[in-house]
Length: 127
Image 1 (cartoon, helix red, strand yellow):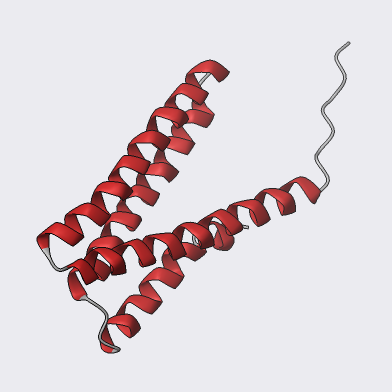
Image 2: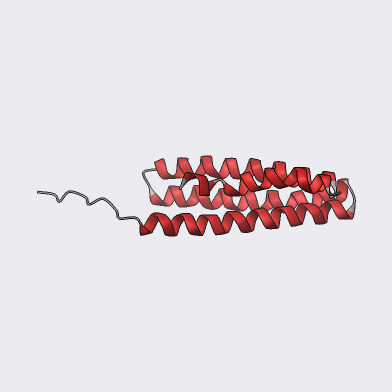
């Protein structure tokens, strides 16, 4: 289900030009789109690195640290858009990020449930 894993990024960049054409605040929409894309690509890379860790504790620590950094980055994006531009830019950035997060969250839940529903290969018994 690789396509489902990236659906938030695909939908985001399909709707950004439409939102701009309909008159949405440019700074807020573009800043939110870029920040969401960057933080998602970082999250995918960190997730891959965490799976390569030998220790579960290290993997969880890496994922938790990244998650908190991503939350701060998203919050700062809304503030920066609102301060650097107009109040509407901050509201547009918040709306874009909220929708992108919701799509990402739902796709993650679907991806995990579909992956777990698939039969797992049997591990050979040890002699």
